Length: 425
Image (cartoon, rainbow, N blue to C red; front, side, top):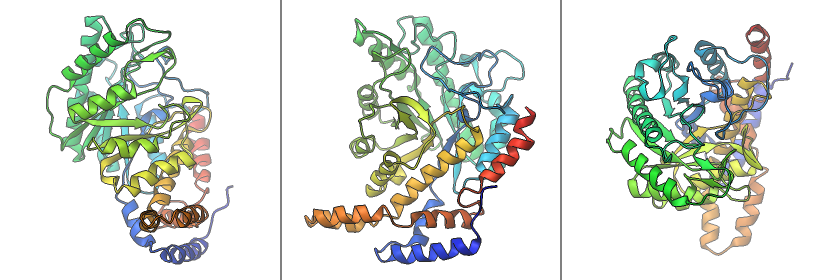
């Protein structure tokens, strides 16, 4: 059994933390109220190793996505996956959403290809979301399919291949709008494709011209922005696309700015030495909104479970310092099959919330005033002292206040669920 803190211990620790932050002009009660209104979109694909539910799905490989590990208890159908997501959400405080991929359609045994999907193929997800009182975000699934030809989809030189995926992209936007109507919550539609070439291409221009034209076709129809927000997601490289990725950061940054859609910044889709946090202020100077995929890459886009590490913390410090929370849509994107999948969701989401809370608790007004005054010594000194402030006590109190298990004691619930539910699969 993992030991748990008593309510009295948490209350006492929080009161001390509240007084300490107040010395810097930070009202922790106000911060916790803000936390309640900032949604985080959990991703469904952590729960089943990115396998999907469609009939033709037969595992991944060859187009840039791979979950490693074989932890027992894999869900066998949509009902079991939703059961696992519910269990994870029951252990996470705050406002949550669910991010859904198109190949999690449920077609009742009928073979329905991705260019023929309809909203009814996601009706169980919509009804479940109503019951959970959450919104749904949506993604086209441009991988794990026979029509990913030579690693290409929307940028393929084959017009038949391009037409298939263009139709899929159009359909996804309409399904997302229907989800938003049903749930009363705007759906964010992210478009990521695996298109790229393993070794040095002879013509980088051709594929990018095809991709631009394909995107123009997909986004041609205007859909009520109250229902749906389009986003495009770049990547540095992938498995099988080490030398060249069509949808690079520069390509999608220019496309998003020119076409007034959102840009997705995935924390794992850049070089390990790049600071994704440093890109946020640049991008939001020219683009209205971004989608932020919080993940953790180790040496490559390995999508490890999010930790409360420097990179994650810096992402949210940059957002809060720029007063940009209303322009950043927070979502998760990792998949680890080597550990308990439900625990992975809880660890990653809570770590993201801790990074957000840490940023909200920062006395940014003091730091920025020191900077304006040219007192860089005081700025650095305060930044370092803030790292040891008791923000963890504030997070435990946040869990207690929202009826969730503080500390690490939620692992007892995970072990119980594993014993009763996962072991029977």
